[in-house]
Length: 222
Ligand SMILES: NC(=O)c1ccc[n+]([C@@H]2O[C@H](COP(=O)([O-])OP(=O)(O)OC[C@H]3O[C@@H](n4cnc5c(N)ncnc54)[C@H](OP(=O)(O)O)[C@@H]3O)[C@@H](O)[C@H]2O)c1
Image (cartoon, rainbow, N blue to C red; front, side):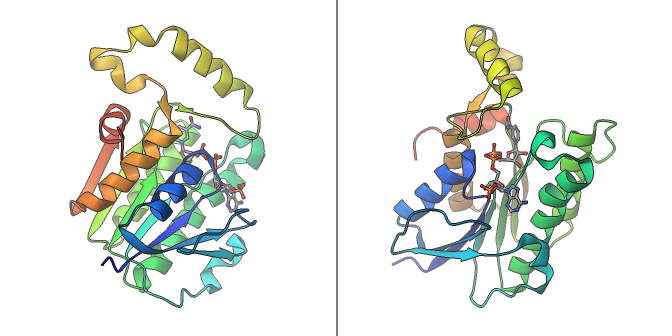
């Protein structure tokens, strides 16, 4: 019988929603804790939902053991309205979760970054994701899995014009994304979620970076 405990942040998002469904419905986890700022809107016998203020994460204490941590947190510049707020959500919150869970024995940390993440990048978004990768790597987890998906596809509650337009272009030209440019093809949120679940079961040890085409391959089926 499994005794593994999972913790997820970002469970209300495109990838997170898919991932929490997998975590709850697969037998690998005994309990799944979701840290959220608003209710998930459903219950499940294995689910523990904790509504928290992410600005107070430093004072938050996790009163139980956690094994595998999944972070699908993130925002857009349109929603965040400033680079400072975006950085706080993507980097500061994610790092606080990593540190908090490490304290209660977490062995694995799996999170979503972006293609070209690089802390020295001149582009704010890839620099921010690079900084997140760099800082998480400093924490002594047994295993760190970094997912760098291309454009995320799937049904969103809000309308994102830029992403919708890109999705249309990607679908129309999908036949072009073969061979070395396969990694630029859009990817379903559900595929990313599947890949995160599977990577956690593989528990490779050390740091593994998954490019979008590797996520596509790993994320087939559950
Ligand atoms: N969009 C793309 O094409 C793309 C490509 C590559 C990588 N990524 C990255 O992939 C990750 C997942 O993307 P996604 O599209 O699944 O994300 P999403 O649908 O925008 O969901 C983001 C999640 O983060 C949470 N969140 C946002 N602001 C928060 C705040 N202030 N406090 C607490 N929680 C907050 C959201 O909670 P609420 O529901 O409460 O807002 C939601 O659960 C992100 O890190 C993103 O940067 C995206």
